[in-house]
Length: 71
Image 1 (cartoon, one colour):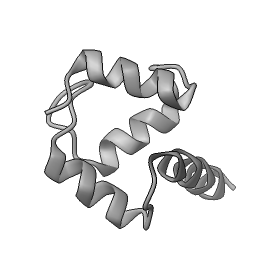
Image 2 (image 1 turned 120 degrees about the vertical axis):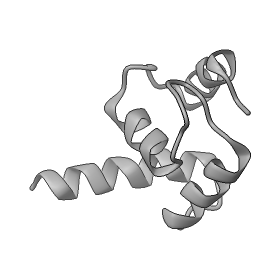
Image 3 (image 1 turned 30 degrees about the vertical axis):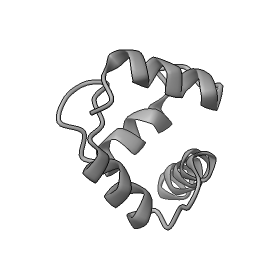
Image 4 (image 1 turned 60 degrees about the horizontal axis):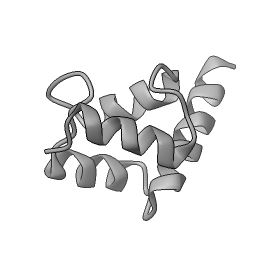
C-alpha cells in the first residue's frame, strides 16, 4: 500500500501538484481505497487499463483522455 507520503513522492517524481485533476483521474482508474492511497493490485490494474507500461505514460495518457472527453 502506498500511503499519503508515497503519493506526495509520486507527485514530486511526476512534477505535478497533488491537487492536479489528472492525479485524481489516475486514482480513480487505480480504484484507490482512500485519498492518497494506492494498492499494488489497483495500481497494476489501473495502468493495464490505461495500456501504460511506465508511470509517466499514465499521467500523459490521462491528460489526453480528460482533454478528449471535454471536447
